[in-house]
Image 1 (cartoon, rainbow, N blue to C red):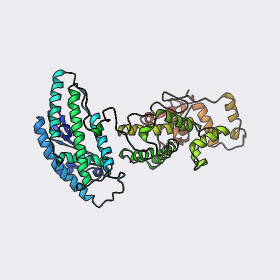
Image 2: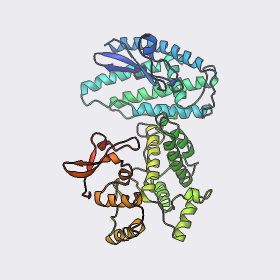
Image 3: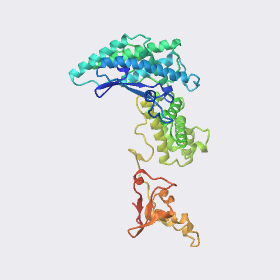
Length: 443
């Protein structure tokens, strides 16, 4: 099976890398917990996504034989883990198992195989060796029967990644195995042609339009993509407030681009039009005009002269869309990110435009009003906060976090010490050493 065995050369010998089926990530007992009872078990809440097994073999053929035996053992462990989940609800499975769904899943798997193809060696002798190995792999795949455990293991992984549930007893499982076998055969045959510097021929019609730089046509809608993005494992540990903010920002893009829009069909021009509409929206547009299409709200705001939201707010929405599309690229759903390089207003090459300082007239107006205009007024935070900001150049959050013990004297000079306390944290550069602020304002 060649590459499909998961063999990895590590030092002088080979190791076996096996991906744990997605549905077992949270429950599968690690190999080291089974074989070394005295070893500490994994921390609660962590996931096991892959296992590594040293094969202690330097010869590739012997390592392949030993790897096949280890895989049979792992298949048994995976079956045990699935049996433990047999009573679990299957409502989270989002796709309906049918032949079209199987073909989409296998085409995605084939695209990942093509993307992971080894680079062509420049050295002629190394290239000849690579061609020989590729031929051996292609012959092995072509002669593998459909009931081979390795092929069925790959088939189970493919359906798990596609959120499909197809039991081995189902007639659809036979179709799935045949499609997976065709994908492996097509990939390894193309690998021989690539390494031999021959033109690539497309044999199976299911993969004729798929290649390393040509992902399969997808049918995922923007609404489905947002749900999958929000539910991705790498985002599961985010704070509730952060998740809520991202959900709100992405909901705005669902309104602007359309929830039924196919992600593979989103163009750069459409992203720019939606961005321009976003730039015209007033602050809190969704709350102020609930149920109204945002494009209509933006047009109304233009006509009535309602000021738009702050440029930094616009940039947060743009960044949210760019992150979603980047994730879709990594997942193989789209070939490229149409939002790359598109920013909000006042943003040039990713750098925010400098803020305008207050004018002399504005400062005179500020310090001639409020507590400064009444000598008998209480000198509370409204009196001291603007003065500290004026003469020390400190940020608002730094001023608000000051405590009595932060007023000190260093080298005979009165100063403020900006340091972390239970009421506030600091940026990374200030965590290591407190920042001493004297009576001279920063630029």
